[in-house]
Image: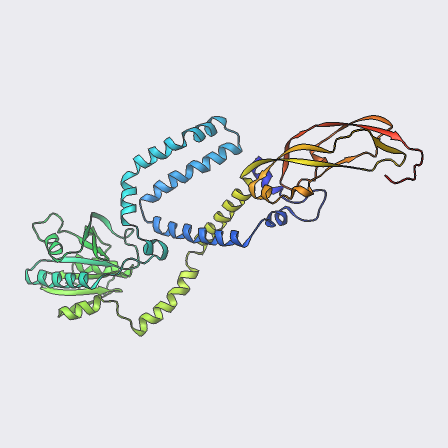
Length: 410
């Protein structure tokens, strides 16, 4: 609770009209805005990249620990706070051991373009040539197969089963996978960029009622994956000895290798240019709730780091005496400064001008002779959001004497 109160009380004191939020926003710089936008961009793409991965469980488990730590601090659970503070390194090590397989898969498959822009690696010309040659050789050998070429859309949420290969694309390897004697021949092969990601993958089957009756499960699976994603699919039919190409929910027969290579090559066309223009608007307005949540989460982190990250610093604070009765004057030695230790956020403490700090002592009720005056934090003009955790002396002793001419200015 003290954490939330310290955030909400950031503002001016003594009845100022400036709200606490306005006082807090005085700390906001253009660098903070840039910092928030960069982190929001990274966090959003991290969410997009992980939401279809098994590693998301690992991330959620790790993030749950600091969340529970702050909750434990808030409601004052000393044992939990002590355990998390002293066993944090051990807990992280245990999580890494538990999720080592997921971590290895994630780090092994991540690429910077995929993470930042959501675009997979392009299929090289050599890889496409190998896919085309393998497809027509399989037709000649009466070997059936289903080859899926992944593009921008992530396919992990659509496919089921599958044996992870993560092997470099190779014509002979592709043919050997679909050999009837191979344990990997049943199912589809998923190719991303120049690597074979999965074999024996099960694809969603199209539910369209307008498909020819002679089409079997292989044709319906090829059509199904292209209906729900931007992937392309090559169908090698061992019975009819044909090569078919499925894209965007449509299937066409391929007669020559050149035609298949042309279909697989991402050549620019007027329709694709229009799709590219529309894509930017879709990217901007897509996932608005998720983007808003990530943005406010980063803003909250900024508020937490700037407003709650506490530190302490010591000052020598001059004492100013005011409202001295006209018939009295201070005589003898009197305290001119006090030692103060201030606590607050690091940003607030770094913005303090020591030359403006003062301890104001009201002598309106002072009387001739020795006066014992107690000091409090209210007597110090510390900025809002800053508290005095220690000051010395806490009491000062003043000697006041009457003067002959009360109209003389002090």
